[in-house]
Length: 56
Image (cartoon, rainbow, N blue to C red; front, side):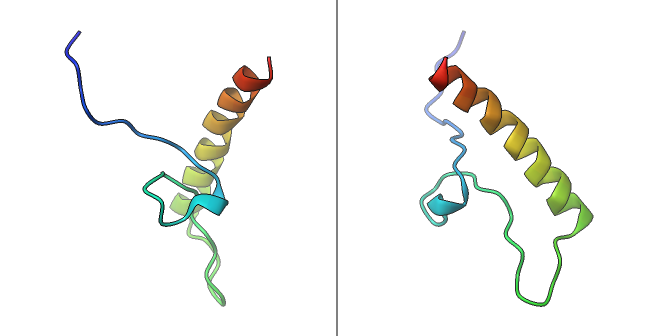
């Protein structure tokens, strides 16, 4: 398996502007678009698996 130097790291909304992949945030006066809502749902699903692994 080839070695790669890039890693994708997920964070929660507290990690904005840190280089981590974070969920979309609703802007004042504009609801999230359907694609943003779907992305956030998948982001939560993946992070839940990680959090459960840390807890177990």
